[in-house]
Image (cartoon, rainbow, N blue to C red; front, side, top):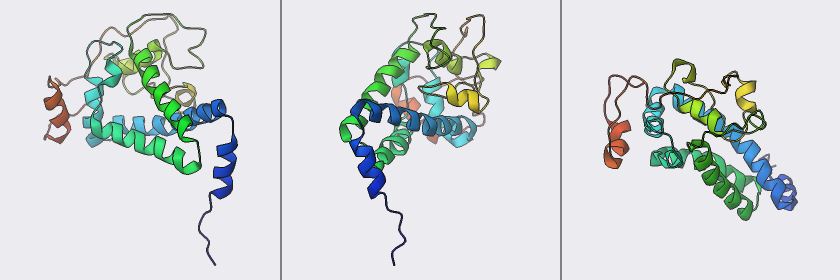
Length: 196
């Protein structure tokens, strides 16, 4: 008797869902996973060394979202896209999700300064994510969600000043990060006395 967990029915059901619904479900599920992975990258010192490369941007703009260590990208995609294939989501829906992620990342890192109060309760906005990158004490270890701030509300890490303010400074608090691609690529592998 084989008691292995059988995903056949789940995969068949998911595969038949409309394309737009599949993309939305992928965003909801992967946002939950990324919330916790992102939070671990902040809380576990050896993971923080990799994520600090992303936070090393001292000026926020649309390209800051692309500043990530390759190993962190591999972990994120491995824990998000791969399970979506396993669950039976169509490859086109997963590819559309990855495209959305990269465009959305450029948007939330951009220095556009728009006031999007009408949607910031439901969607991650540039101001929401800029507070994640802020160097002020209030900005440390907050706003981990990628698409929907719901998870930050639920798990007590939501921070959005009511007065509409933005952070004044960005970068890694208390640490001078090396400049240049190769130095930042090697940064997590170097022995360090002060990580965060």
